[in-house]
Length: 499
Ligand SMILES: Nc1ncnc2c1ncn2[C@@H]1O[C@H](COP(=O)(O)OP(=O)(O)OP(=O)(O)O)[C@@H](O)[C@H]1O
Ligand SMILES: [Mg+2]
Image (cartoon, rainbow, N blue to C red):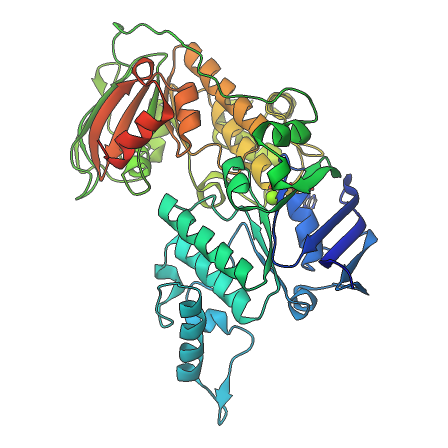
């Protein structure tokens, strides 16, 4: 009998180009196995092959030592394999219990036995310590809770192997803690998990073993206890030097006229009085917990939410921001937190997305886009941001998650805005690309433009910002010059209101 609950050997897969080039990947019982690698390395593809979403071109999969064919999600479920996708897949209009029993409804005398399904769901949820009522409609749940329900659904189906693809990308700190408890409970129950993440601190904390993919081949596989941050990054990038986010002290004219002045901005009943200013060339960070109001403030400045009070001035002149058109015209750009909903048109190509807000400016006449210029510009974006794609005419939903995010960044940089607002721009982006995005932000500000930067990753805020505003429950509770912050812990304390 093999040590492994599941083994993949010599897996190959090509789309237009080879994506997996003979990959071996094995999972032990009850382990958390981290799968890491750069954007487009092939992590999601490998897991989609294991869960029957994609078919493989070559290679073998065996479960408990026996060769198997997994040709559909249904096959995978029968073997006890389930995947929690980067994009969640619960049906929003149904209740928690209906989702848990989806496709396997229990009937009594020909009618759906709702009370039985509610009762059984409650048992599963309780056994996992998930506090939600089975009758709750899924659309009313937070992202974090939806994810827990999705895991409960897999556990109810008796999953032995669970794949979590970047599960914490949109979770708050407390939701992340809760997820980690759930993972260790499942481990105790003998469930094996594959954990994909770009957050190395999470991997060092919860994973037992680690496999590093680089450009479709295994770069390294080991126990996590034998690895550290530097060695992981080294294998990911394939070179001796890891990229670090060091602070580069920048300078801008602190006596210049404000580029942006926000006074007594009222966003809603919770965020009622926000005032701050931004100088040309300045990078201003917003730190705070999830729900502290960071995203709402940016959305209001972008005309996506209605301003309920206060004034916004650009170079001293008041501007009306009634809708996003107004904001774009005034020179604002927003790279939103939820790229899938707001940032991209998924059925369009890389090029179409990258030139979207700019189309009117590339028109020779009213109808024709200057294709040559547009192609050159997008080719340039692809090179500059290292976007992994086999061409600018590829449909964006076929790119890996992190590469989609890079296209969103490119799209707004192409507009050449006066003020760029970034909301968690590096979520789901690999360590190399994070450093590239941070460089781009610096270059942008060096041209005398303004940057508002929201990130939950303090290391990033500390690396790139000149000044950091701390928000707590809709109020500004502090404004720190980067020079004054000596350690990340100080910022952490300010955010948590611990001192
Ligand atoms: N259905 C598809 N059609 C064409 N190409 C695809 C398809 N799915 C994935 N690819 C390509 O395969 C490569 C690997 O993508 P994959 O999603 O596996 O990367 P990843 O390691 O999960 O990256 P990320 O960290 O950004 O999520 C990418 O270059 C992607 O464009
Ligand atoms: Mg992926």
